[in-house]
Length: 330
Image (cartoon, rainbow, N blue to C red; front, side):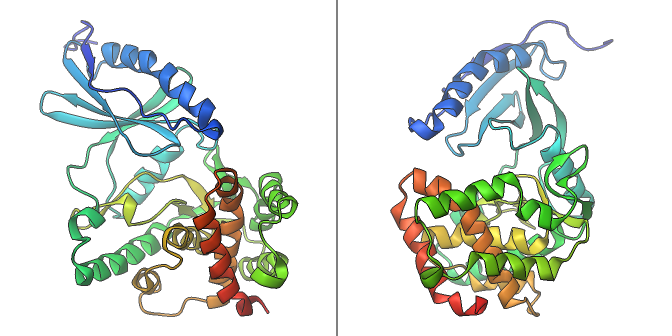
């Protein structure tokens, strides 16, 4: 390309990818290490970096992706490579661009493609701490942040999509919510919980009833929302307004994404910030039974991994929450 240097850049790695060392993550750990030389090759030859000095620092956070902070003189980028097969190529960029067009603040996407047959997205580096890091010692401010986070999530759900589940050629892999809820993946999670006795109807409520509540509420429409599917204040930078990052792109109903968000909090503390829920409903009505059913489904989605990792406190928090709210499904 005219005006672009063809000279290879000099790439310096400041550290190596963090490995969990857990047996359940062994495959991802091996992939992290295998991707390092391929990432170096990409940065040395891509036209955006060619002929320049590039330094790379791997993030110490996250287990589902390899995340690198790439610095070139005064410029800084984030390069993310999903490690699993549950994030289809181009889906994160699609979601970020859609939300950005809807006036939700997200990192701007500069480039997407493949490195060593793995999809990647190169995006804007946000020079700001997480909201919890900045406001964690100010309870009143955090209440405001939780409310704003709920409002942001509601706005993220406004763009309409078609189909449910993972992104396949721009739409959800399943035609209806019912098909997703009874898919092989969800059935496998449900069967794991039954086989290992992780939940009990008489103590925690009926999962079958939870599914029926959701199917009756959502119906057979193929219309869905763009869901973050891993949303919390841990995925909000303290900008004005806050910047949303690191989605696990998924097409589904907004209540399912809201339920997944609340389950993230319940897993760690046994409860969730009520102001976040108030912000999502804009101080208006949120159907309590439908939301609880969505929370139940998300716990079933999450529990097999938590059980395999022997995270007894998370499981106990789920048990306690379900037992306390069991009457909503009776």
